[in-house]
Amino acid sequence: MPLDPGAAPEDPGPVAGERTYPILPCPDLEDAVGFYEALGFTRTYFQLRPYPCAVVQLEDMAIHLSGIDGFDPATSVGSVVVVVPDVAALHASFAAGLRRRYGRLPVAGAPRLLRPRRKQGTATGFSLVDTGGNWLRFYRLGATEEEEPAGRSTGLARVLEVAARQGDARGDEERALEVLAAGLLRHPGAPAPERVRVLLYRCELLVRTGRRELAAAALAEAEGLALTPEEERAVAAELAAARELVAPGA
Image (cartoon, rainbow, N blue to C red; front, side, top):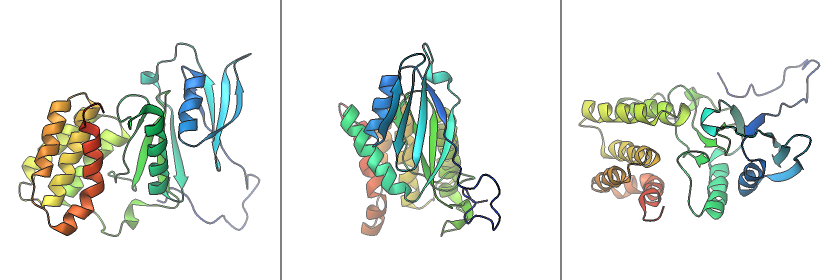
C-alpha cells in the first residue's frame, strides 16, 4: 500500500485541499523552536502566555509545538509520517543544520537524526526525533516497499532490514543488536558488502547505547573486510558516517 494515495479521485468530496498539522509536545518551547530552525524551518508564530505554543514551517510542512512544563521527552508517544519529494536531499539538509547547531550529528537520545535506511515492512526513509522525543518519519512521496528495484531482500540484507525495523522504527536498539548478532552467525558466507553494512549499523547502534569502544571495534572489523573498488564506492557514505560517530570528541 502506498504511503500517499497519489492522484485525487474524480469527486474529492468536502475536504479537498485541506491539510492536517501535528501538535507536538516539548519541555522547552524556545529550545524546540531553535531545533527546528536549525533544520531550516521558519518560526511563524510564538507565544508564552496564556500558554506556550509556537508554529514552525518549512515549505508545505507546518508543525505546531506545545510547551508543557515538566514534560519528559522519554515518555513521548508523538509520531508523525511525512512524505516528501526527495528523502536523501532533505536528510542531507537536516544533517548539515544539526551539525551547525550542535557541532556534531546527534544520534542518541532527544534530539537525534537517523540515517535513511530500508526497514522491514516499509519503504526506505529516515526518522528524526525532536527535542520533545517526538518521532517524525520521512518517506518519499508515493513510495511503497514493493517498488524497491531489487525486490525483496534475502540473507544478511534481510536481517539488516529486520534489525532496522527494531532500532530505527521502534527505537529498540538492544533488540536490533540481537537481530544483527544472530544474523551474522546464521549467514557466515554472506557477501562482504552485506557484512560491512551490518557491522556499520552495529557500530551506530552501539554508539547510541553508549558503548563507544565496542562501536570502534565494529567499525574496525568492517574496515578490515576486502571489497572491490565498486563495492567500496557503494558503502563509502555509510563508512564515512560511522567514522564520524566514533571520532574523538563526537
